[in-house]
Length: 99
Image (cartoon, rainbow, N blue to C red):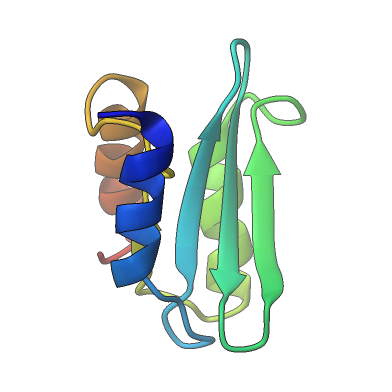
């Protein structure tokens, strides 16, 4: 199964709101990127990357806490749930996000 077909299947089920935004993961060869998106309004509420910050998770959770967001929907972006994506999700849960 290709990444694109997984991504389409996931996006059909996962939807973010302003109370519970969709957290999207993007992996490049060198960096990880996170975005919290409100799909109702089509706006990005928060974003962080390892390009700017080495401590991606704490930076991202700090931005979300400032906006009083505690619960999110996790969108793995078509990537399989293992390796970096799994570690990222587990660390987001440890940092206090619920999904």
